[in-house]
Length: 289
Length: 167
Image (cartoon, rainbow over all chains, first blue to last red; front, side, top):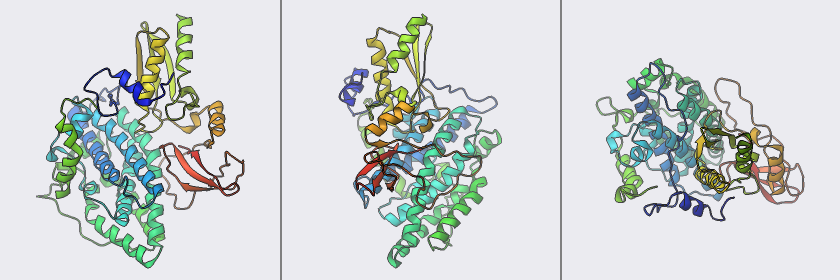
């Protein structure tokens, strides 16, 4: 019963003149039980979902920037697929983050309202940096999601169970490139080392728990990121060893009065990123997506 | 009512996947349940991948198919848990994939609890070329034109092909 053209089917389902942007974003949690688990503070749960959702949204945006810019077609496709999986996680998590819904959270919050770690913010452009960045991000997030599979929140547990399967492929992709480049030519080795050195100042922040993350962990809903450091270190050590690279020794980038991404304090890159990410939605606030 | 329920299920089972039109949503294991609650049809589907953009089209196709069959009160629900696995693709679905030149998935990797193992080497499992049947194939990329497929090449007949990757 499918129509010839996928867009016709969508246009039929949305008989609305404002529908103009090529896809329809219904509530991704339609028909999913979204009751907050007993004993859990709803505001805390929403804030926690924003943190995890913003990490995925901003990382996905940076990966999308590689579309038409990757060195090989296969990598272009791989990066776009990884970006799409993360965007899917972001949609579910931002929908879970409160009544106002995913579009509001993605497009109509200001910079200081975003709760992503600063790691996901810097502009890319260098393939060595991209691979180091992706390995760090996926190793950290995969370890978090694997623990979130047993979350008391059914939505978080479901997003995690799905995400673990997908991110296993993402991490392997980054790890195998890191080994190929690190254990490649002298030139590729240097580029890969420079990538890890550039990314390293934002690594410690990943394992510094925000009070909301601690509370969510105490309630069996979230994960204290400090608890995944050992697993992360083990994965990175194994990849770097195979890549004939050393673990960088570069101090962490300090926050502002101890505040970092999880508090809404971001790097300079974040403002530019949001300006692009949000521009169309803000120019057409009545549009239906 | 029992007859009507069977009909609704039969109608839902005719709806095909927008990206893989040779397969129905039932073949793919995406169609989880069809039931009638208080005089309306409730269809439950599960996404193959979290970000799968085909979900909206699947919902619209199911909705229209059931309305065309005379059901006026149709609800399409998303089921997130348990997560979809390629193990849910039916034998008929796997056969149709192979006939369309897409190597069907093997058994999805079982995972015990604890940290997810890292794989630094190439994938070791054998995949047969859907064109010439040779087992002498190699992986080109674990990602392909859609999230669910990997790209491979047959060393016997030299043809590239897609494989539905195990998840």
